[in-house]
Length: 119
Length: 107
Image 1 (spheres, each protein chain N blue to C red):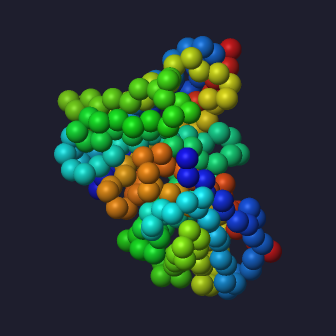
Image 2 (cartoon, rainbow over the protein chains, first blue to last red):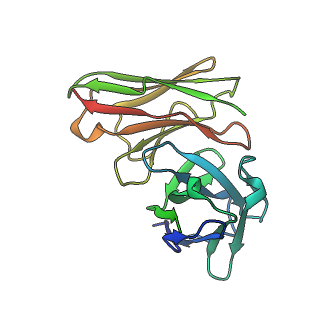
């Protein structure tokens, strides 16, 4: 059964870089027609798509975050990662990794991890 | 950006009620809309994709439809497990956007 699991620090200082990893089990992230995605949800608010990396390595980012975001693949560990730099309090959110297929939208999600930006 | 305007923001309903949630897209997106259910403290769960396709394992009381740029999620007979927040999402373009969410609460 395919599973996704986020990991990373729960607290990040303002102006620093938020780094999260999503470990994928039971399917290779470098094969198949999959978009490995990051999303976030501020406390009590709605969902925001951050970006994705295709299994070939091609990336696409939300223009509102593009200048601060990098998503990358680590095929040796079957993981993909998110880096968001110059964070501020507004970046406090639950961060989710998810898989999108070509047709079935975001069909698999990690459980989410809360990242708080605070000094 | 394609905006997804979701309504209502809250619906109060009883077990057995028929519930309808609507998303209107700001431009044509064909049928590239998905619907998700989210319970407190949990990740969203895919219910419907490509407007009217039921995800595997999702009860048949959920259905989706489209008319032009208006997309609808219907729960035919609300069950206790259905009290949650529902989101629509368009994936017609490379910039995916979500509706604001609809909370289905107990009347």
